[in-house]
Image 1 (cartoon, rainbow, N blue to C red):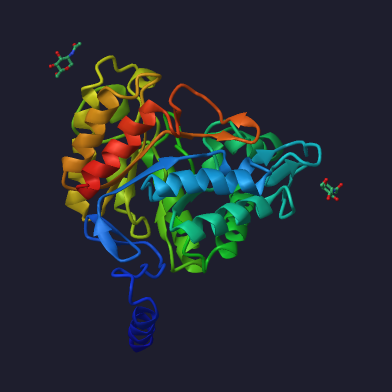
Image 2: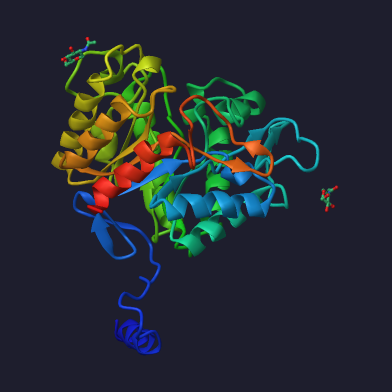
Length: 368
Ligand SMILES: *[C@@H]1O[C@H](CO)[C@@H](O)[C@H](O)[C@H]1NC(C)=O
Ligand SMILES: *[C@@H]1O[C@H](CO)[C@@H](O)[C@H](O)[C@H]1NC(C)=O
């Protein structure tokens, strides 16, 4: 404490013309129902850019992160996994290969060194990253990439000892690489873990064990599940049920889970009225409030029409007790190889949609 006070006053003397010296970078934390980022306790805006660690050109990473930072987005979620069963040609990024019952982590130039660059570039810009370790879906390998060599199926992924050993070895490799980095917001167990028609105890026990394992390696960073927030009281539609093996409140109560996550895709979930999303946000916030942990509205979007109901969801999140931040899906930009992936949820930097989804929302949050 004394040391940092001394440092601040020394900086103040040197940069006396600057009224507000740059906040020292630190690890994000929670304070009741809020997040604390670099000394600020308030609501934060962010986004997803899953593709960042798969870029092979550092200048592209720098440009995308410059645009994200200058727009006032603070939390950024990106993929910390890229699993394959067949090693691709040199020059194509992958992080782990699974073949013949063996998992091999790629720490090389087109392996975790790409994630290293993203983490250090985020750190330099005050951007805080959320990094999940495996995908429920087959994009970038996913749980099926493990299943393909260890056997069983996606239901068995959560309990197969060989798979869990390989997964934990990968988690340890990634976490220990950035344990001292202030560029990490949180670790996530998976992207959208589902265990269809399983007892909710399966995901709950896996999440309990994995979150404790991460905290045993890294006391510095927050941990969350990365789930869609399914399985909660408040409605009878499919996402409220535990059909996919999730119980939102049960999982948020796990001691080593620091905040709740939920996603919102009405059309993909068979919900025809986007107004439904406002209740979905409020029902999660109520669970977060009752458990005393912040809620992160971690992925949301509407295809193509970004400046209508999506903005209402943002306003609902911002206005609701228990909500600490929101991250729309997803950032797009124009880089050396052209435009980044357009899945119709993409909001491109510099577009008029960027103004409504990002610029206006950030202004609403900061009162600018
Ligand atoms: C992969 O490509 C890079 C860049 O062209 C090169 O420096 C490296 O030696 C190659 N690695 C292998 C294993 O061929
Ligand atoms: C959507 O739901 C809201 C709230 O229940 C309702 O007011 C609105 O009329 C509905 N819209 C349509 C198109 O059904």
